[in-house]
Length: 144
Length: 144
Length: 144
Image (cartoon, rainbow over all chains, first blue to last red):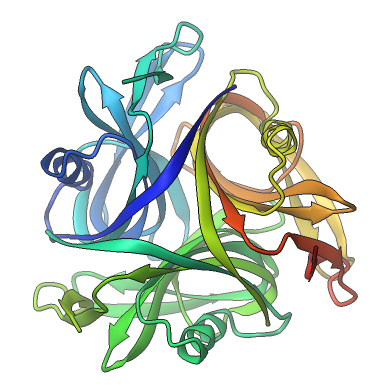
């Protein structure tokens, strides 16, 4: 187990524009505001969802798209540093017109209908993702 | 993109009573405590779920009810101002006895079995929802 | 309705190790750090999920296991006191390789692939769970 003790910082409430890319929009906000370590939750709706599932055996992502308007019932994620720049890692759950729920790792290509985000800066060390041998993922492991 | 920089305020941990209306209960708490801008997450269980899906093409809500006891696996939402009063916007994911997940925009008529909420006041401008031409929704757009 | 006004405390960002037990890992962190009242959200992936559904009529839990690698699309929960010790209550939503979502009350036996947690201490009274006659659950009801 690795843990980092941080102090709660400012909270940004963010509304993304219709037709924005959800993942790119969050990343752009982090870059423009020089946010290096943060936690976020969000809700809203999207025109389509672009998701990934990590195949733990093959150690690679499987990408898929849900090509219909969906509610975003729960989004959670964080910002940390990869190769010196802010990197957004977020998962989300979605629901269709019948209420059925889907989810996964958020990929680019998820198009906003209306999204409301709470992103809180966390004050302390800047947390850096490093390659993890066990999972072949970039996981928290260093600090700046 | 619109964003508001807020400072984190007090956190209210709230337990709603069995048979309360989940959405009305959160709204009542906000009104009684004069909470104008806040973020909330919650978990628990309900006797039934009353949800909405927004039809993006027709620009109107489709309402539906799930008439069985469900776990609330994830609730997320916020409080902002509509027509001068606190307005609660929240989405939630639910799971049935087989673990299947459902979700949507929380409507009145969702009846509490046991619910635990974290609601944090956000200090700064009071955020106001205004009609949005593109989506026909009330979205964050003004401040008091 | 019962509510407790708390001040936001330090935020712990926690990465659990592959093959750890998710619920036991959070509980161990709380015990080792003497955390009595906190709120947490998390995301990641697991090798298998071990969940519970509360049968509201019979007033007992129904346990089930999903024996496959899953994304954790949303986890939410809290720490409070039961019988003098930190007790973790958390629900989570998961998604499989097709994106289908499942969820419930997190049980021991959920095995971590990679998990990132935000756990925030809440400063104020230590909140105690007490037996609730109506639901036969331990619910927030006392303070230390």
